[in-house]
Figure (cartoon, rainbow, N blue to C red):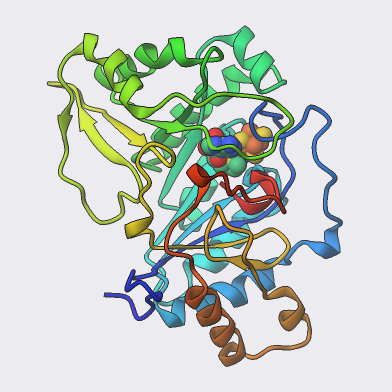
Length: 325
Ligand code: SAM
Ligand code: SF4
């Protein structure tokens, strides 16, 4: 059991770190075509500052880290950050969420630096559609990146697909077939209504499951620690798994174990609430480890019981790529 728990007795042992707001893709549900107005170098936490936060968090009981963004592999010298984080006492798992474009180049060095696993976001297997939805022609690199991650032993590689009505929902069977034929671990995610300038519609998990039923009966896999919000299943005989993340149709806040560090140094206790605790100002005024620990505890104490998306309360201050999805 972790040393940190919130006001609702949820153990908190997981910190997601957004290392950049920049990206080499422009997914329609995440960023406008022109990108977002990017933070200057000085507004973004330096690696030493991220390290200080992670050390303080680890000393309170955080044991799992995930690097995200923006596109984390688009930030220079990410390997050195992974190396620094992997040496922190108490951190036993470091993972990465990436769009996969640069994985062929970085998978092996990341593994050597101490990264354990990667999740790759991939919303379509069709080149023209990828070009339209990610506004860049880079599907081939992503598919090759997934292979590179497997070869490097960054396993299990999980493929995350955000299912959007009329955009890619006709491909759920194709993704699911990869779990049977190629041992992929695919997770279907309900689109959350973050502001992206596009009007898009989510597809409820129940509907995705109905569509998959033509491939066979999905057998539930007992949940284990580290599954996070996903529920896992397997088609009979398949090597890979099918997961569902359903923030809208079945909210999973009751066992949320995470905190988020934004690219500009705010600790955010909930992805879907605008509440934040500033760490960058204290860090730059010379805060000690003990002072950082107090601020982290404040953020944990402010963690809301659940999100209120269905009641129409949306986070407004930031886009997903600044918080780190
Ligand atoms: N660039 C990396 C990537 O795409 O994996 C990391 C950052 S991205 C913001 C992290 C994850 O958030 C991706 O899997 C992406 O599909 C997901 N995401 C972004 N906007 C979303 C939204 N509105 N609803 C659900 N998931 C979203
Ligand atoms: Fe970039 Fe990831 Fe957002 Fe796509 S989802 S625009 S890859 S940050």
